[in-house]
Length: 429
Image 1: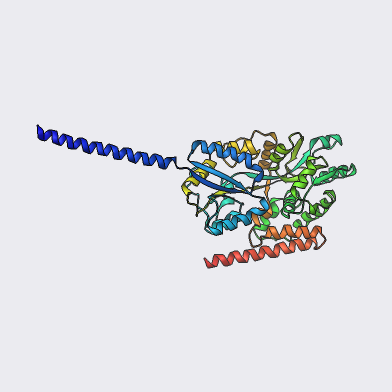
Image 2: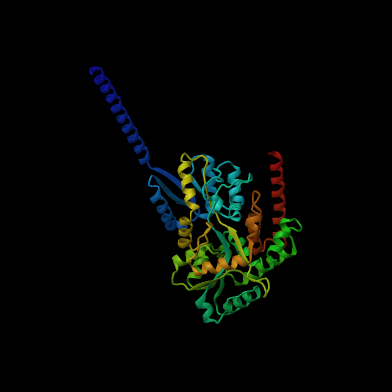
């Protein structure tokens, strides 16, 4: 009996020790669980800060041990800031990626984590994912939205002068003439930043060069950028100059928006993402949207579309696991609906329905007849890119430094150089 008691005592001590060790282990795990991980998120959307704070709050409610610091920079400075941060190896954990060649360049530099196995990524349409792929075919970003290039207009001004929403280029010119005769700037346009001229071209040009017919010929190398159809699109760029603000090349986009807010200008041409900007800054302004212009009376308006930026995880991040959780959140319908409701934009997440009437209007038009933002989607390669050469040359054209013909020659020569560089890189791999 004594022996049994002794054995029982030993067993009790061992059990007690195990319980204490288990409790200590759990205490250590709880401490680890309570450790807060902070992630740095880079973006070029300074105007979206308040909305992103709501997105982040929704994520942090589910992941209280992960905190995200949203760090937006000016769009024109973003590329340089991001490149420097990635090269230094001391940059952010999550980065907003420019679409198409912008994402590809960073992915090819081995700075990003591939997201092909991320839960939810396969639910997003391939057309969206194409804008966030590397040369290896892997997906490196979660895309946000499909942008559309549109013409905003002031409904009160149009009603005052009994103007109808123009559907063709000819009607657009007629409306602009009436506005000009009444001392109203037809189009609030800036040109200090050259990309705004490329955007202007992307929106008014497709109905001049018959949209996808030229795009397909270019992709199949049946023609090049010096094609007469491209020249006709530059004729429009020259024709519209009369209806832009005086010294528009000295204006930045904020100046152009101010002209629209103050009702000195009746129209403003840019991406549909400016809808949220206008509703935040001038909610009293009664605006409508022209989704695109018709190539002919019997066609639907041709809407210029492109996938906007995506978000990716930096390979050098010490917190990849936590960053990937935020990426997964961005593929959910909860995030997609928040994104659409807050920013009045179309989400890339399937199943999300926009509530804003103007967003619905643009979405419906783009589903009927759309064409890609030619220079961004298909001519974003090279260093400098052909898109950059083209838009810089447009500034030179407006300054009478070069002819419209030379704009296209310069762009085509750069496109050829970019292709040669790409072919050389492929041979060296």
